[in-house]
Length: 346
Ligand code: GLA
Figure (cartoon, protein in one colour):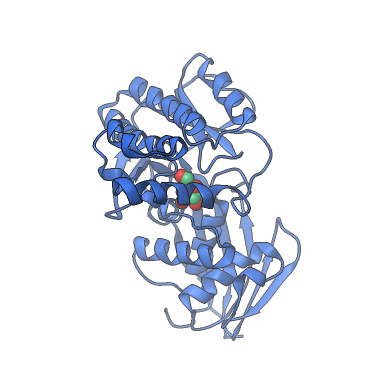
C-alpha cells in the first residue's frame, strides 16, 4: 500500500460482456468491455476508520480498518468496501463519497466497479490483474457469492475502443479492437437482480460436478465427450460452457476480421445456449432479445452477465435505430486513481 496521501479520486468503469457468460469460473474464455459508466470514490486518506457516503444510496457507513465481518456491515452497499478493507488491508483509513453512473442490478458490474474504485481509493498498488484478484476475493468475503474474475478484471484492465479477450485459466488479457461501423447497445430487461440469493452458486457447483467427471471444461474437445455424464442436467450445463468457449474465440476472431455479421450471430447463439442449456434467462430477457434481433441493423443480441434479470447487449450496424429504451455504450480504459489535493491526515 502507498503512504497516506491526501485527497484522491478513484474511477472504475462498469462492464458489458459481449459474449462468454458462466465460463470465467470454469477457467474458460470471456469477451467483456469496460464501458463509459463508472463508479467514482473521492475522499481523504487518513485515520483508522473508513467512513463512506453514497450519492445514490441511503445511510452512512463507518467501520474500523480491521473490520472483522464485512458481510455484517450496514448499510449493505458498504459491504463491498468492507470486503476490500479486509482483503487489501489499507495502511490508513478513508473518509469519502461514492457516486455512480453504473445502474445497480443491471448486470453491468456495479459492484465490481465499486470494489475496484474503493481499492484504488484505499491506496492499493499492483497490476490490473492483482487489483482484480484482490477485489474478487473482497466480493467473496463481502457477499459469499463465488463470482469469477471477469467483472473485476474488465474494470481494472479496460482498453478504450477494445473488448478484452480474457483467458480465465491463464489470466491473460488480449484487447480486441472494435471494428468500424458497429455499435454496442444495452437494454435493461426485467427488474433489478442480485447475485446474492440467486442460483449462481448452484450453477457453479453443477459445472464443478461435471468437470469432476470429464476434466476441465475448457479442455473438452467436443460436445460428444460429454456423453459420459449420466445426469442430463449436468450434460446441458457442461454443453453450454463447452460451446460458449468456442463461440467466444470465434467471436473475437470475427471482430478482429471485421466480420460483424458472424460476431452478431454468435452472440444470439450464446443467448439460446444460456436460455436452453444453462437456464439463466427470463421471459423479459428473451422478449428483449427477440425484439432486438428483429430490429433492422441489429446483428445479434444476448443476455449479458449472470442472467436471472439484468440487461441485454446488442451489436448493431452504426446508425441502426435500436430503440429509445436502449443506450449505446463505448469501450473505455480501465480504473484509475489520481490525487486531487493535499491535506493533513485526519
Ligand atoms: C457475474 C460474475 C462473473 C461471471 C458472470 C457470468 O457477473 O460476477 O464472474 O461469472 O456473472 O458470466
